[in-house]
Length: 115
Figure 1 (cartoon, helix red, strand yellow):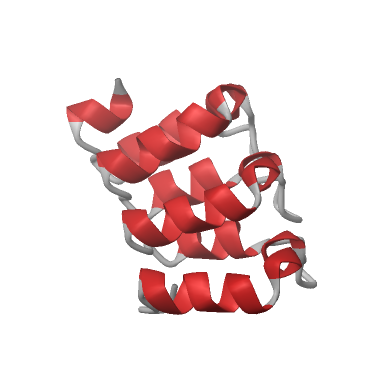
Figure 2 (cartoon, helix red, strand yellow):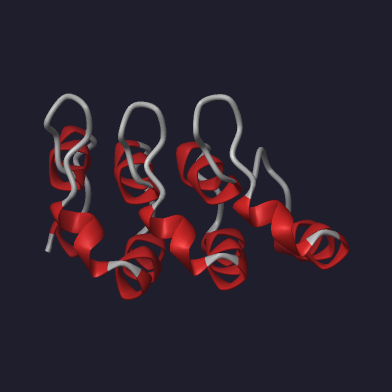
């Protein structure tokens, strides 16, 4: 993320596989950041493969990676990948009571994402 390629992310994950599970001081794992920074689908999928439970890790704002992805106008491919791993993420509310759907509609997401 931050423009990193899938190859760079996979290389880092090979060097330190548990890195995908590490949280920062805002309670975010690498998957959260990838979604927050509008990473490509291959990067998100690589991080999901390394740490599937990351899809249900809430940050300090109680936001899941799905909410971050929706707030940044992520592609349908990213949204589908997140929901395949964590379908209940669509029902999770953040600290402001917002669902991922609220974030998606604020960003004028495509019909495929909102569905």
